[in-house]
Length: 103
Length: 477
Image 1: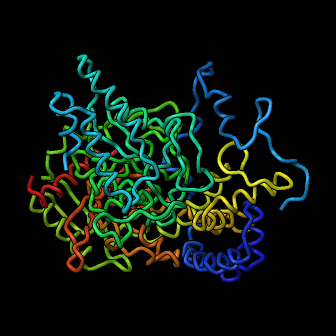
Image 2: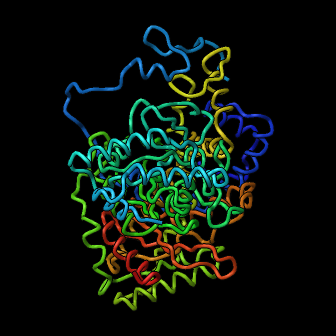
Image 3: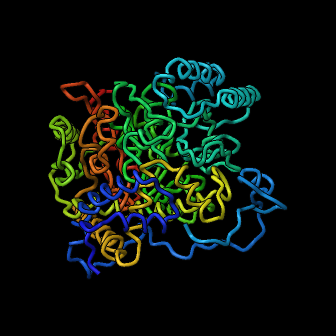
């Protein structure tokens, strides 16, 4: 599907904010609609290149499946880690209820 | 200002105590950092205690490392156990990491003493350090101007003499550009040469930790103290690294050096910056190198590709700030609303902009046109560099198209700010190494200009040698 950045709308920005789990104020939505359109307009030069036959590079190193021996080693202390959490209970992270409508 | 190597020699020989060195630097910070704001936090008590412990070991005849007693400033996106690590973001304010980054451990083992955590653009996203949630850092050379970014606090700390050495991270130029704007040396090592365990992730296929110093020799010493394989980082390379310091003075006779046309004739380049590159090339020729112009065509698309790839990776990496495990939580009726509110209130404008851009570039219907296409451009850049390196040992370009700009000059125009990185970005996309070395000042304002030496992967020692030759042509010593 061809991208058309000129068509970026307020509704697109609201949709992307939902995907990104980001609550934005009205003024932020307005500013981002404008600014992202300008940035994507610049990026359209990349979208327009005829390079479908060029392989993609995701990463500069030819590394894959870096493994280590499966052995018990020291790790972070649970109590110390949980002490940085906003809320914890019984050795676990505590969160608000998980059922409800997505924002 | 005393160099790191002179401090280490004097402390090791017991001509000066580490405590005395630390006190002197802390006093300078105390006097001037109120105005500059290079640091988010200064850890004076910890630094004094570490200095005293080091002095005791030296007195007991124990061996100490090559950076014995040298004060070092750490960018505040490097984890330090028990010491606040904020990424200059509200979302991590007050968080104390439960572990140290590998580089922090290695510098401690080398005898260096951390004096504080330096300011940055929030999550390293920016080119001026104005995106910090805790206020901007000012350029020590002219306090009405930015120090560059994102590692602006580290560059300013070295330029102001707060510490002879500092660490930064470089995703698209975040070490080299502030180094250029503050008149110090800054270097991005080959991807994978320095462990990133404990570096808070921005864009994982691009991020690299590297050194700042007042001169090339000190920067080499700092890199050698921290690089090499680390089992805690799965992208750490295990190749043997060529020693830098031993070869630093070998000169450039016979080396083939290419001036990259696309990065030198870039839109908006200042005439004095372009002239500085030409003069640096002349100095290298006079020192026996063979210099020619070279085209690396795909680099013209580097900026656009970067501003799709880096935000895409950031949108994924920053998903972890969800108000559950650490940092800020803004409570709400259920977990989704809590996540969204926490992120909405915890992140600043630039971080939100990049998360939005990255999420859009990865979303259904747009993935291939933006992210996929940017990855293909990345391949072209790597190929074009490979072709250039068949004919040249290293490449040359400006570090930044302009000298330091005024605070506020580009904050309303994200694209203008992004253009500050146009000369530095291709190196990150290719996973290569590059170094910025100060080379003169602009004629109008007397602000520092940086010249960039670029090398292929694992050519770190070679670019240091060339940078040293450029430095020598300026200082004569």
